[in-house]
Image (tube, rainbow, N blue to C red; front, side, top):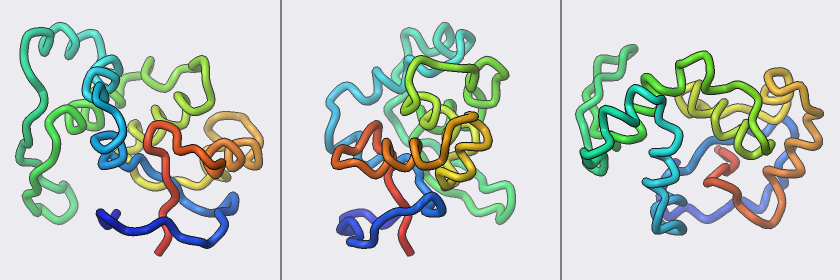
Length: 144
């Protein structure tokens, strides 16, 4: 979303879409790249074990053919690793499961109602986790 935009005073509902705000990661976690590298599939963990994934790469939007600069690690995660069957299997925390689902869907915003159908959890439980006073893993609402 728009960098530097203030959080909205509108209270989120189960129909408010959420996404992963990667700028939150770079502003709040020194080891965010290490954390995200742990999400790489075994193939890419091995492939990139001795290679830095901290640069920008060109990416072609499949719908518009527009070339954009995107983070290399995010691109590998979203385009390949998150598409593996084992990526979205049941995980220990609700936050981790939501994070993985958003990655697997290309970080397209999803509502707690949508996430509920995929996770088998109540939408209000998901909303409560996502809309509390603390931002977990950069999971933020999309307003506007």
